[in-house]
Length: 399
Image (tube, rainbow, N blue to C red):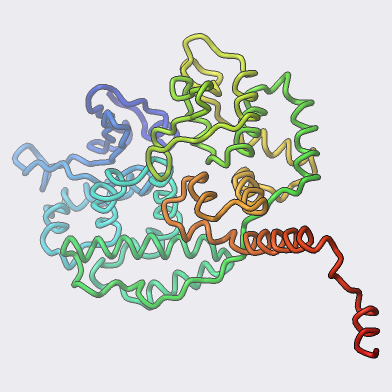
């Protein structure tokens, strides 16, 4: 199949049951391969020296998302020019591991680590960091020669976006750990070591009781025309579940009698959610679409709800809570639990936290809850009879 390759065209290609090859109509030999898993890889086919007698090669250029279609096209043109001049770019690439660039190693890192070990959303997030920040700044450097000053320079360059800068640093650290593990760098040479992360402002925000009431009033007004986005918002607040955990939920994994919802592939693995009475009420009120397995069906057949961010942007504007993200509904659930005396370990279990330390961000609320409980017990014991005002205490001292 032949087609001019563009970013939009490549991203809209649907995976088949076997590998698909699409050749570019503008550069002979340049193409993209789409695997049944949806992976899209650019490649170029050439003969060294040109003509029928030249040695045929078909090396991979890179994975779409890690490099752009425009970048792949330029590399293909460069390699074809080298081949016509009698040089083999693939041989030069393989001749010395010392000459391996970070861009080349990224292809290996994606194939051996990101794709088989990380979830789809994380893969997309990492692809964005590689394409936007890491490859433009470090891609041409030798993977063996990159040093701490190189990393520090990039990290400092991103100082105005500290959260993003720290995510890039974490990804680079993982990348160089794998480079050491697979023999592309000497052990103990990770250049990210001792590069200090930027301080990040807390991005957490919890809704107050008044804000929750205002939000519910807005949701009721929108419920008839937007039953599924409204249900999503309520479920996010009432369960503390993550966005994709709710969107991917199927009716086959919901047990209304036992009050359980099974998450087959959550961020922290397979787990179940206990459904409280308000959650069950939300689920029971939802209209079901025949043939669609999802609790929150999308517009297309057999698909789940999408684009909840647009709906949430509209809701929070009307409810005048413009600084609240969808993920903050999860924080609200946790904060209310801790404030009402639930232990951090129990709240962590409700949220599906794998590491107990993740829940420690709510420790200050637990301390406040304990103080309130202590005060309530003290008041109940003495009934107020032992409590003196400052004036009474002063009078007792004088007498």
